[in-house]
Image (cartoon, rainbow, N blue to C red; front, side, top):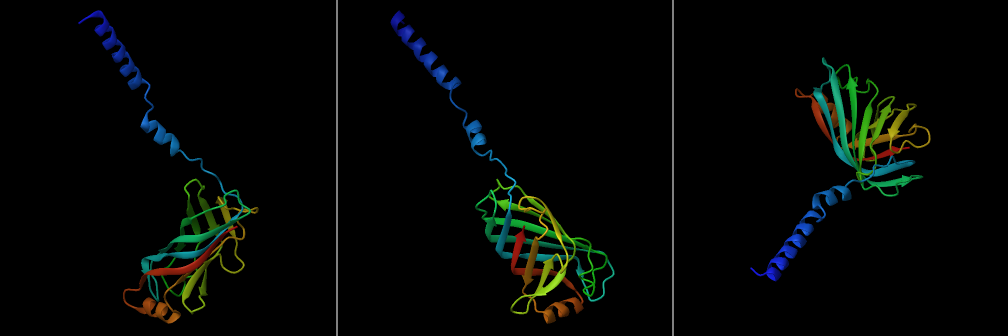
Length: 207
């Protein structure tokens, strides 16, 4: 090999090595681009479309003999924020847990303070945690059974996003099932009891 060919080959090797050493890492770039800043949302939010389910563990009966946990899990959408540093929220995934001393339908409203947690989309919005003083039966416009937290005269406390100016004191969650009061009572009186209900509508406000 002549000196000129050797020099050209050496130069090419140096260039290739430099390109490999200084090529930006695609992994690092992707990691940096997906590292979103999480923001605690101020103000309030109301979501007017709610669907999900209510589960009773164990199932509730007309006369109960065991401690019971009721879990309300739902997806909220059609959300609007007010007075917030976050202008757009697509949806929320929310869970409210109610513990009771008995799995009796008769004493369904006798509960410890319900607690709720929620995550939001986009994920850059910080989660919400809420506690409520009470739990109440309500009815939809079509007469179906629903549940509301807190009960009349009750209050709420919110930490995280959408706590408003007074720690979410006026926050509420109302959900409606697809059962009439008669159907609900029949399920309670059945041998299997009532273990789950669908949520077909509702409104959620954190404020």
